[in-house]
Image 1 (cartoon, one colour):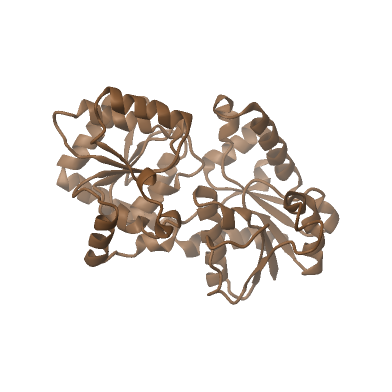
Image 2 (image 1 turned 30 degrees about the vertical axis):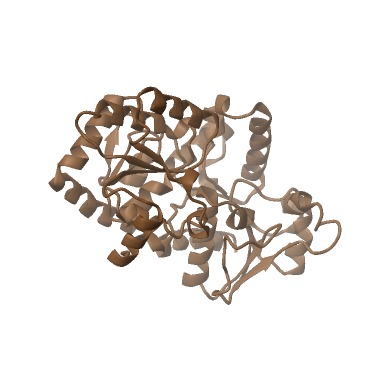
Length: 381
């Protein structure tokens, strides 16, 4: 079977949507190698190296005007290339499919990660909300199957867009298999030196936006200022909300407690997340107190890294963390402080969380996640 993907995020996005795209495509190509996979992207980049896969083909627009107006190519004109390459199924990996897809008679699938902008429109530009809503609704209406990456996302699709439940399949995602590989002590020391990491640290990974709630971690650390001296290492970028977080840090003199790694380092292996497993595996625990997520991939990365996870009891986080995570009310700085203190000081608790995490993570192996997506494809072919 020739399977096509709207793969811009795989080549352009270094965070969640990009990780999802790269991991799923690689998993399908590995565990279902009898099929051919065509990645449609405006441009090939170093972010996704497909050279080791004989059955992955990267397609970019080469003729005028598609090579100049790549957004039009992605949103509509790509249909000609799908027919030319005899694509038998098309998968929009992040919320959209081409306009007029039904005219091609090629079955289509779209992955819907979340509808966060519908729940928190005030955190987005009004024009972006309108654009996202139009694209997302179009994809849900005209795709033959909709993949939701969590039960929470499926519920939101039904609630906000009235998508029929029978049209939606829940397919959990996996993460980069590098997180499951034990990093050698030598490599850990190299990474520790490269990034000037402290001997002990808590870890936060994610965009620095209001929804992901980094400020609450800072408040918890402030409450423990006389009890714990463990710093927080932050990996992620941000804008206005980051300024608010930094104002709090400066006001409460936490500058030596919060380390913004993304400000200091721009190594190629940092940008591609190649060094992240070694950073994860040296952390005391990973903290992800988000108010709302589609799935929460850093939680899974931490479980595979065999470190404890503190996360919120909201949204889909209990789906991702299972019985392995330590859950807190994302609005409570005291619960955050208690969680940090308990996880750090109680060695047996940490050991139990890691053991449960290893078991729970087996639900999200690359092979299992790829198989659920392939089952969706088989319903349409």
